[in-house]
Image (cartoon, rainbow over all chains, first blue to last red; front, top):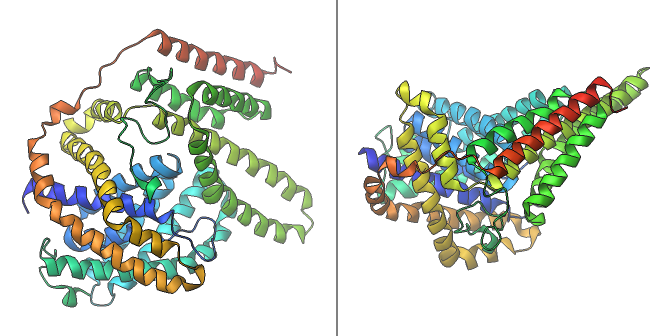
Length: 180
Length: 270
C-alpha cells in the first residue's frame, strides 16, 4: 500500500474509533455496571487487525485512547485505556494471525474484551496500590463475554462490507469467508 | 448526537476560549506541562492528611481562576467515580466482608482510610492533567510534543510523520462528526431512544448503522490521501517557548505550595 494511502486509512480508522467511543456514551445499557462499557471502538481494532500491519494497529489504539481520554474521561484514564487497548490488540493480533483456524472474529473479539479488562484492572491495582480491586474481575469477565460478542458481530459485518467494497486488501490476501 | 460534534475551537471542548481567554490560555504550553507534572506527582509524595487538604484547596483555586465549565469538570468527576471509585469500593467491600468475619476488624477499618487517601491522590493527579488539556491549544501541544520527542527522532522514529497524521486526524474528526450528525443523526437518535426492554433489537439496528459508517468513511480515502501529501511536517512546529509574567506567577505559586507542604510535613503548621 502507498505510504500516504496507509496514513489516510489509519486516519479514517482512528476517527471512526473516536466517534464510536463518543457515541457509546449516549447508548443506554439496560443494567449499568461500573467500569463496564460496550467497547464499540474494538470494532475498529478488529478491522485494523485484518487489514493493516501490527505497528499500525498499535498506533490506532494509542491515538484513539489518548484523544478519547482527554475528550471524555480525564487524561488519567489514558493509563487504563491504553494498557487495556494495547494488551487486547496484541492478544487479538496473535489470535488472528496465528490461530485464525480455531477462532472466528467473534471469538477473537471476546478474547480481546476479556484482556482489555484484565489490562485495565491490573493498571488500576498498580496505580492505586490496592489489590482489592481484583475482586471486581469476575464481574467484568462476564460483561466482557457479552460486549465482546456484540462488537465481534459488528466487526465481522464491517470486515465483510469493506472487502466487498474492495477499498482495503486483507493482510492474508484472502476473502472474509476464509478469514472467519 | 448534538453533543458529539467536535468544537471547531482551537482548544478541546469544555474551555470557554471564544470570548474570554483566561490566564491559563496565555501560559506557555511547555512551562504549564512542567508545572502540571510537578502538581500531579505532589499528592503521591506527601503522607500527611493536611497536605492532601492543602493540595485540594490549591486545585480548587486553580479551577475558579481558570474559568473552566463546571459541566465538563462534573463529567471528569463522574467518570472517575464510575471507572475507579465504584470498582475499588466494590473490591474493598468484598475484601472487608471476609475480614470482618475474622478477628481483624481494626485492620479492615484502617485499610478503608488508606484506600480513600489513595483514591483522592489519584483524583488530584487526574484533575491537574484535565485542567492542562482544557486550557492548552491543540497545535501548541503538537508542537511541544515534536520538541519533547526529539530524542526519538534521533533514533529513527518518524515523529514528524506521526504528528502530521495526528494533525490530519484532528481536522478529519471535526468533519466526520459533522457529516455523521447530518447523515445518521436521526437514525442513531431513534435507535438509542427505543425502549430499553428492546435492547437486543437496538443492537441489531445499531450494528447496521455502524457498519455503514465504517464502509462509507472509506469513500474519503483519496481526498485525505491528497490532503496528507500536501502537508509539510515543518509547518506543524509553530510552538515557540516564551516566558511571561503569568508563567513566572504560576511557577512561583507552585513553588510556594511545595514550600507550604514541606513545612507541613516537617510539623511547622501544627
